[in-house]
Length: 116
Image (cartoon, rainbow, N blue to C red):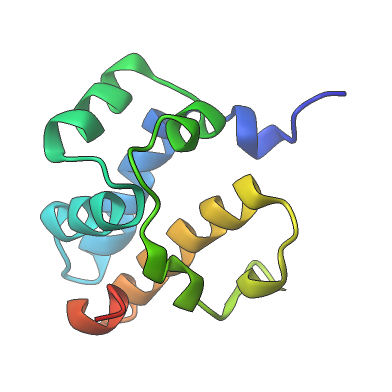
């Protein structure tokens, strides 16, 4: 069976889009990186390595050191779908990341985005 198209998409191709979305709303690349590292457990060097290797989303999340336990608190709608109702674990992780970036672009405080 073929992977869904988004699973095979290279994280390195989407990463600049996350940054651009944040910067359009006067947020920073550093905040985007902080969100990604919080969710995945990557440190800055590990995140950079994933970008350089041009891994797809499936590999990016499979190699993530540790998905943050508070990621279960991420709720809401992305692309018309409630993230907490997504059954596919990989798709849910991808949509969690999308939701966090959306919250950043909407101007939410980092404390709330990182579910502290």
